[in-house]
Image 1 (spheres, one colour):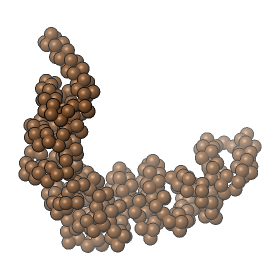
Image 2 (cartoon, helix red, strand yellow):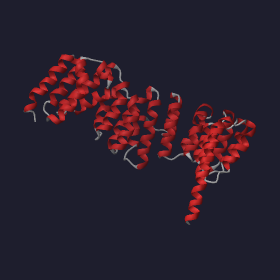
Image 3 (cartoon, one colour):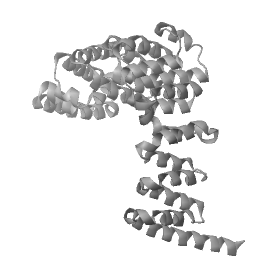
Image 4 (cartoon, rainbow, N blue to C red):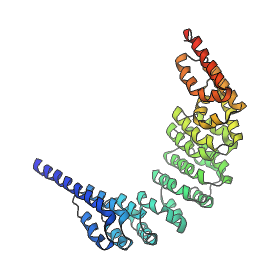
Length: 364
């Protein structure tokens, strides 16, 4: 009833004020008084306030009290609390914690609890990492695990993960394995894409080529997600295929996002090739959009690397822009000012914009 709601509200307000005092004291509690301090927070009645207090306290738990904290906090329905506890666990305690997590089914499948163990497992128990990967079905949990795991792997370990995910699967057979596209195979494609930045060079070309062909039949969100994962490790012999795949993305923001990751990773020869490919596409489509998107994504690289291919691309962009209506062209011209200045100098900028003003009376 109303009176009980008021009392409940007053209680929460009182406990929040208590928690604020606990938060101020936590860094200064002597080790011998820590158990009492811990139990005082554990006695908070409101579950949300109590979990907030325990989460706050975790970084200050002394090593001597850690086993008791672990046993006590397992009874609390809050995987986030246990995950934070693992993340702050003394290194000597990690083997015991991991064994308990692996043997208790009610927490073993909570990925958030497994994540803090990953750096330890990669170094000390890599075989068990592979076992966890084998146990997980394809889906968001596996992909999230791989996203945490992949940056920590050596190239050799990454190959082992690849073999675990796709046993007895030759790289050239991956395209066939991903077809026809189903919900599970979309997650297979995502899982493989996560590994690409960590794979050794000798595995890149075949796998990236298979993924680029596979993503063409996905929806635009999945296409963008996969291409963004691949973009930093594209072998330059696949640059043409990669740009063609990026141009399939129907939303400009997705195309520019992928290009912003791809372009900084290119060598100077790769950058020149990208400019030539964009110029060819503008001619094929009669549209300057891909050129503008490339320069937008390139940022400082375009402004700091004047060259004949860059000049040629800018020239073609300006030629195609002249065929557009004024309201579409002027914003693009403003964007091009820094690059035009690099390619032709300040005088070119002044002449170009003076010309725009002169024709403004009749330009539709």
